[in-house]
Image 1 (spheres, helix red, strand yellow):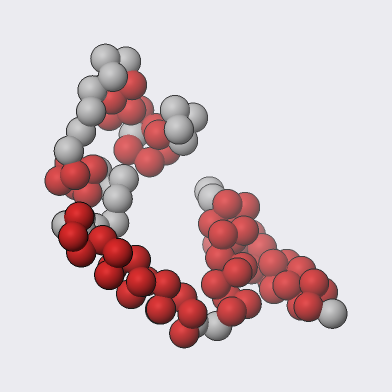
Image 2: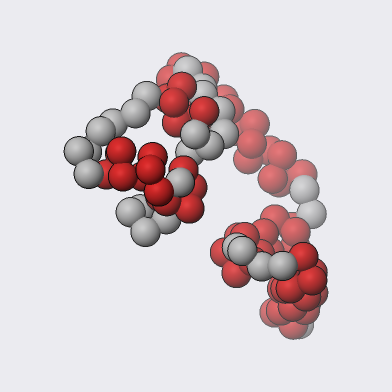
Amino acid sequence: MTAMLPGAVGMRRARQMSLPGEMIGAERALEWGLINEIVAPDALRGRCLEIAGLMIASNESSVLGQPALFREGDGASVKDAFALEDAVRERRRAAQG
C-alpha cells in the first residue's frame, strides 16, 4: 500500500498518513479519491450485489480485460493506451480459442 499511496493521494498526503500512522475517516477518504462512495454498513451487502449485477450484465470480455488495462496502462500515453487495449483484446480472443 505504501508504494501506491503517493500516486493515489499525492506525496504530502501519503506522508501525513504514513509517517505518524494517521487514520482518516470515510469522508476524507472520499474527498482524497481513496474510495468511490460511502455506504452505510447495513446497506453494504445490497450495494455489493447491485455492483455485481451490473458487472454480470456487462460484456464479459470487457469486464475481464479491465484489470489488466488499468494495471498495465497506468501512466501510458493515449497512443500507448489504445495499443494496450488492442493487445489485451487479442490476448482475450486467443485465450477463448
